[in-house]
Amino acid sequence: METKKATIKREEPQTYLVLDVGDNPIQINLTDDNPNNVKSAFNLILKELKKGLFEFKLEDESSDLYNNICVEYLNQLNSEIKAIHTELEEYELTENE
Image 1: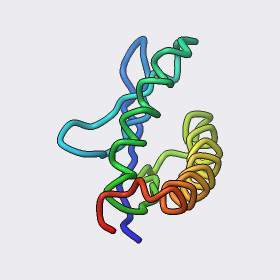
Image 2: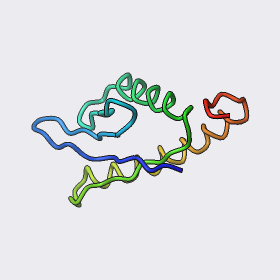
Image 3: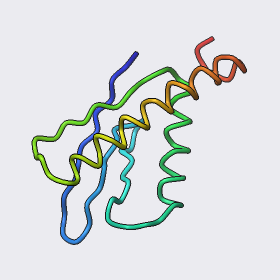
């Protein structure tokens, strides 16, 4: 299983969780309540998941609220990724069969 990097980009007034997926990193705005942003990020993750199983590992030195939120978010996301990848394999929807 591949490990992909996740980082936190802290800017004023926005803060993002940045996931290295594919050619362009995915940015999830942590300071905006927009479910469409998360939905599109998840769709991009699904496209990449068809190529093979991976998980995200947070690379962040700060121990602030954003770090705590992102650690929990990535734990949940990694769990979902594993479950979805299993289903993709069961339905023969992965690219490397």
